[in-house]
Amino acid sequence: MNNKFLILYNPASCNGKSFKILKKLEIDFNQMNFEYEIIQTNYPGHMTDLCATNTFEKIIIIGGDGTFNEALNGIMINPINKQQKFGFFPGGTGNSFLHDLDAQKYSNAMNIIARGKTKKIDVLKLDFKSTVKYSLNIVGWGLVSDINILSEKMRFLGSARYNIASFYYILNKKSRFAKIKINNKAREDDFLFILCMNTIHTGKGMKAAPHAKLDDGLLDLIIVKYDIPTLSLISLLLKIFKGNHIKSKYVEYKQVEKVELQPANSDILNIDGENKWDTPVKISVIPKKLCIYT
View 1 (tube, rainbow, N blue to C red):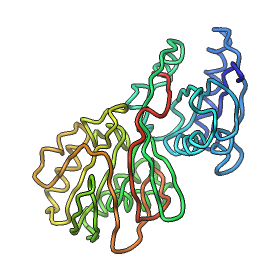
View 2 (view 1 turned 135 degrees about the horizontal axis):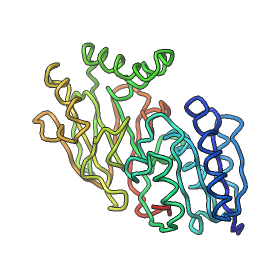
View 3 (view 1 turned 180 degrees about the vertical axis):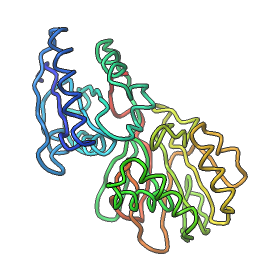
View 4 (view 1 turned 30 degrees about the vertical axis):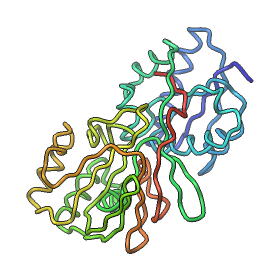
C-alpha cells in the first residue's frame, strides 16, 4: 500500500470552498513534512471511482456531506478498505457529519489529522430493490426530502432557500402512508417524515438525533406522524437545533438495529443531504466498518 496521504477534493463543492481548503492543507502538510498526492474530481461519481480503486493507506477527503457520501460508496467496494484510514475536511455548506467530529472548522479538522488518532465507526447499509448503497449521516423520507428538493430549485437565494422551503412545507404539509418495520415489528400509518440517523447532526448543526453515537451499532430513528398541528410543527422544528424536539408528544425517538420503509408510492430519499434513490428501502447498521481520524 502507498503510505503517502491521498488528498481528494471536489472543486464544485460549495462554490469552490474545497479549493481554498486544499491550499491551506498544502501549506500545513508541507510544514509537517507529510508526503501527499492530490487528485480533483472531474465528473459526478468520480469521487466514488477514486475511492473504489486507490491503493493509499491514508486518504483525505475535502467536500460536503454529498461528497463524503460519494466517497463512502466507493470505499465500501474497495477490497483494501479494512487497511485504510480516512480524514475529512469541511468543503460543503452544512457539513453535518463533521459536526459530530467537531471538525466543521478547518483548524479543528487539521488538528485531528495532526494528532493521528483513529477509531472505527458505523456505516448505514441501504438495500434497494436492485442495488445496495451506503450512508454516513442520514436517510430521510417525507417532509425532509420535500424541503431538500424545493431548496435545490432555489439555489439562487443562497442559504435562505432552506428556510423558505421549510416554511412552504410547514404550511403545505403532505401526508404519506407507509408500512414500516422496526427490528422486524411491522406497523403502518400516515407520516409527515421519518429520519434514520447515524449521526447526531443534520443540516446546519441541527441535533436531530441527540443520543446518536457513531460507533454504537445502532441507528437513531425519528418518526413524526402526519397529525401534528402546524403550530406544534413550527415549535418542533425550532427545538431541533438543541435536540429538545424529542420531548414532543408528536415525536417517536428510538435506537434500533434496522428499519424497513415501504411507502404507498415510491418517493425519493434524502441521503446525506442529497436527493437520490427511491423507496422502498431496508436500512441496517454495519458496526465499526470505517476507520477515521478523530
